[in-house]
Image (cartoon, rainbow, N blue to C red; front, side, top):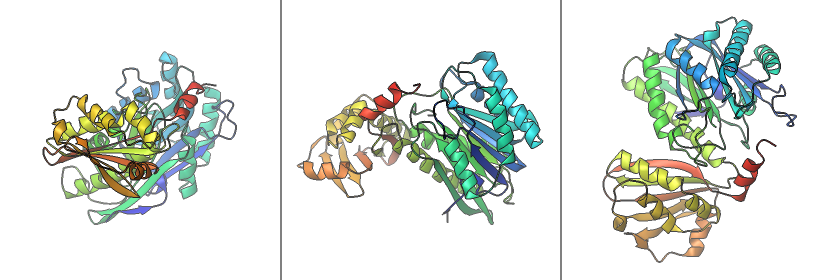
Length: 410
């Protein structure tokens, strides 16, 4: 049984965190902008990163660490400036951040991961960053409030912090997986500006940890889209310090799949949080493709619908304009028979079939509007070709999305 608990990234034993304000976000007094996660015990680490060819300096630094370092102990994060498109100077600042944190935490610079999010093209104010690292190291804690401070400090245009922790029995031991993320705009499937940090006390090898994360990301974060823009900074890091005392997971066995199930629930929750908090959004938009011939077919169809600007605008208007859904499915590149498709709209107030075998049912527009007026709305397309399915998450498209992004640097 998987149980939800409090504590986010500090729920797993041996982890500490905090978040502070050092003034990186100019003109935004009172906004926290630096966070740190620390493990008393060295951690195995796994990571997935942006598919954008333009990669921020922290992405390059972290990939090197994930691929080549035996263990890590800390993550330092700043928000407000992305440290992307900053050349050798920007990469050098990653090393400086890691070295400073290593000095404060008594570990090597290659045991420190770094992450940044915010405006592209600006150099980091290293005087503020280094002072911030000193403050972070001196204020680390393992209380729920410490995890919340960290989750708040990584936000940019997010309207609220995003964190979760789950506990389950694996190999006869209680194992915890906790996570926090940020993401609201510049979010698109294939690692979406999103940052995510997950901690666990599970004892698992680097190979199996990376496998679990990579597979989980495909079904969760890679199924999220807010606006079609893939960031330069997308990063998911998973740290495992092994303090739960379970038998080492070093192969695909019962314990591995139990761990992956918990990890998937954490990632699914955080993915939905990102989608529902899309810039200017009023509703989480979930798209389910069911009874597909293959997983690939279902993924293509669900992604096409969730990224359709016209469909997203219809969701904002509470308009059951199902033709936009079928149209998006048609240009997805997936092979299916439009004349066999059933489409439903669903929310907490009910479920309504609006299309049967490719044509409209005699549905009530009033009932459809009522269903679409909730803050979480699902479109379900049954393509009647098999038993596979896929789910994608996005949000509606509103006037406020344009306003937020027109003023982003102001």
